[in-house]
Amino acid sequence: MNNSRIAVLASGTGSNVRAILQAAAAGSCPVETALVLSDKADAGALTIAKEAGVAQVLHITPKDYADRAAFDMACAEVIEAAGCHWVVLAGYMRILSEAFVQRFPQRIINIHPALLPAFPGADGAGDALRYGVKITGCTVHLVDEVLDGGPILAQQAVLVNDDDTRETLLNRLHTAEHQLYPATLARLVEQGFRLEGRRVIWRE
Image (cartoon, rainbow, N blue to C red; front, side, top):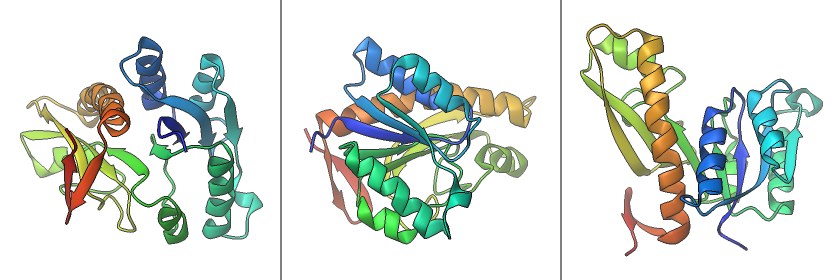
């Protein structure tokens, strides 16, 4: 299997999808986005992928399946048929089933708008702001069965300003994400890693 082929799963506007596609087009991120898949018919990520000429751009409706596991297995079949090595979550708002995670061991990547293990969950930026931290950031991590709990691949710090709102902080976090995510994907393809317990050790 070609380890540069990725499937991107997205539910929202697709800003990280755009960042990955732009970095790939510029030659700084040596990945081939073979598939962009969304659970939302109106996801901006689908439009971005179509305009960029991604080979497969699909909307799969969760309501067409009996349960989360059945939906996830349908998505998994499409990902494997497309020959994708990495499953890249980019604003994908569904919690993955255990069976899906186990089907792609150490090959599912997510980005989270906080410095994990602090502030996991759906509102990392808002939670950090409400807690009063002075530094937050974003984390790229492997996905396992624990929500936002997989081994950490990379992190980037972002200062919290006294006058920040959730929206202004989130904007700066997104800017950091758009740098960190393509750079981390490039390292996955070019270097690879090994695990020592929870520690990700990048190969030379």
